[in-house]
Length: 92
Image (cartoon, rainbow, N blue to C red; front, side, top):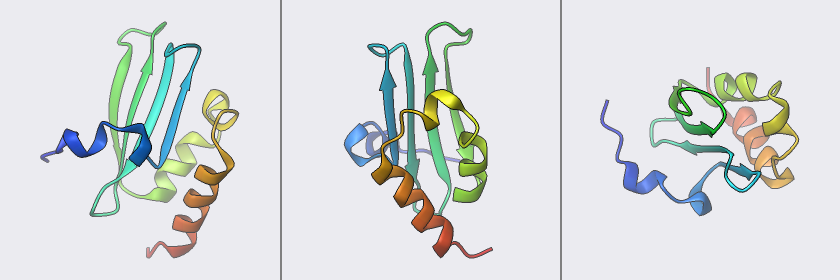
């Protein structure tokens, strides 16, 4: 699968964009053209410190992040609302 990273490198276009503790934890997620969620995560204290994850659907993505305290506690309400709208629109 080819991922054109140029369209996914800006937090302004992200579905979810979280950066805490001066960049020691970053979580960015983008909706791809085919409905997948591409997430980049960096946690400086972990090894390896970063990961690129592809979720098959918005529901799979939401099910993964809803119990991750540092993501859910920092997510903007508008971002969470967008996720919930996408969950309502999804076709299984």
